Image (tube, rainbow, N blue to C red; front, side, top):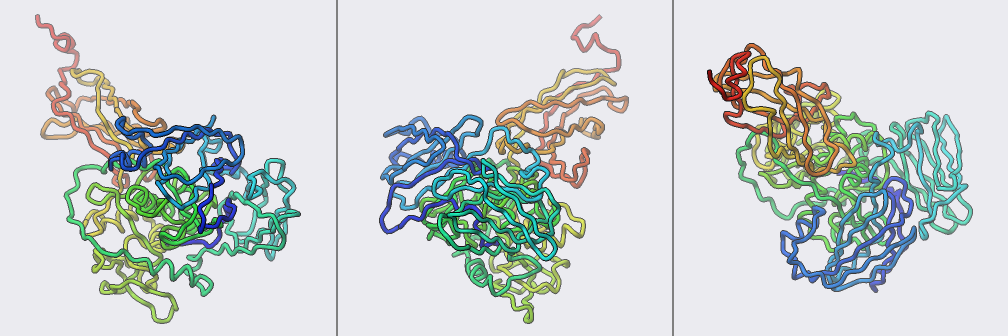
Length: 613
């Protein structure tokens, strides 16, 4: 997993962690960074009163059980400003809401020394459904005073490389944008009198980029190298600290799973609603349990904004979509199972890389897999990945291969001693190992995407060996939507008539990002043959949280003879986007109703009504 050393989002005032102080907490817009007129309901709970199920529900964004005693309740209404939140010995449940925004739930551990610095809220109706926050611009962003959070106007933003020099200024809202076509790599200089300047080097603009930049008061210039550690197979000496941190992180033990048989379709897993990310005291990266501050995001904002720190934003869209699934699953696993004090996951390379850049390519890729994670034997998987998993250490590339088990050999990925069986991956041949060999190969996703594999193919390849599971390669894509029940317009029908099928669906994915496209499939079965109506396999998206009822027609023809039929319905994710069910698509769920339909002779309406002559 990859970490860009840049932290574009430097939101915090420095705090000493030797003496715990009341924290200055901001509530901000996740798209623009602007402070919000919010309402924060804080409920204090005795930590001993929370059951495991209560805590699980809280992490999923739900309420604890009615049996939980609320010791104290307080409402704070910060009006586009920060507010103080002192340490406390109680577990505190926070519900943050604002007009025009989705309510976010998070919590503070009892007696935690980790300072909660900010909470980011998603708009209820995002202006940009395409996740290109720059609109027609190539580069855009907002600039703020780091301490107060107020927008800064007339900030000079200069862009340069060997062939172009451009400049613009931020407006009254701190917004700047450049619509000119830019080289793929540029330097960006941000300058404002009374503030420390920032020079962003090697900024990738192959995809439109939105930024949120907080400036420190002061003088001088802060130089930030934005070169992606994976660029050109790089891993230069300047990344040695990142390399050591990333490669030294090893699980303390390996619990090899017993492979369970998979029933038809995907396992339904509900994604956690939010994630608490740990940072250093200055808002930079930290490792493991050594973080002293935290930020809270919705899970989908975390995936959309963080994916480009692990995958290169200019890579093929199927590579990016494939990467978004283990990125989400790894983060979600830490929400539900993490043990760090005061946060779920660290923003450093030894956890999962996270920064607040916003490339349209990676944001759209993450939105395309909204809510999809990986399961291992029906439970949320800690889905690992690393840069280059080929089981061959090239002695001449100067890269550090930390796979403890290279027994698979060149052209294979895996680490059998860690529970990841050998898997033939010819596209990785002669690429030296760089990483631990477990799970997905990041460079491998790009090789495979360029070779014509879809993101579904890539995920299936690395995590379950193309549906031949064993060991840790027994992971499958989960589904955040569940088919509750099926209803039909009538249980008795004549030949050549039209039947309507109603799909009762429960959606637990982030409704700011539609789930889909989903294909509604249906067949009739008489115990011998299947009868389908492919022309009416409806493609749709699921936009509503909770229960939705979707419908599709089913046209009977002369091939459907009189008799009793089972109705088999299914949900597919339209992977190839062609609006037709095919072998390329992911089967999400199958639902069978035995003896659901009786087909009569054409025109035999009187018998259908239950009368006889």
